Length: 187
Image 1 (cartoon, one colour):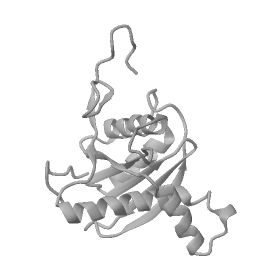
Image 2: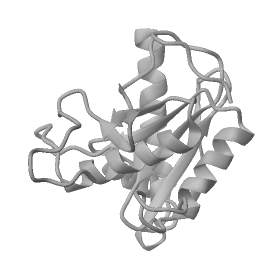
Image 3: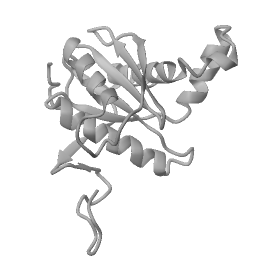
Image 4: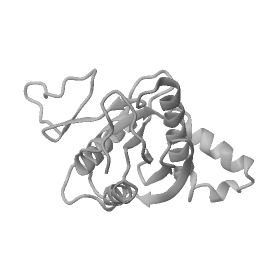
């Protein structure tokens, strides 16, 4: 695996991950980071904070290794207002576990507002019946997340989103203190 340069871009495949409560969508780009394509939908299994590593995360790590990924982008679901909720925390924890398992390959969180809606619209426009969306909507959402990150990379010349930093099994957030408040347990 090829770690990305700080502040710049290195050539290499990028992976996109759409984290859901039941399924995880996985997408990949070409080595030049031009086009995102679907890879697969994984069943979400196990607790991301526990041991052993859940099979879905093991699969992402394997895909990153096999493709010599330069970066992994994980979708960060926020409310339309920009506020964070329980799904955001879930995605941050998931991204933290992925980051611990694939280090030194960087993991970045990217805004994924409206990706599932966009994925359903794309599937509908492609003529796929609504009842058959469930099997692939997570892959399509991962493609939308990744393509958005790729477009941002080209426009900015930098990796998209917020880099996940792992400190003593906690995921650091730029706007939140990692240390627990007095009397609280750290998760």
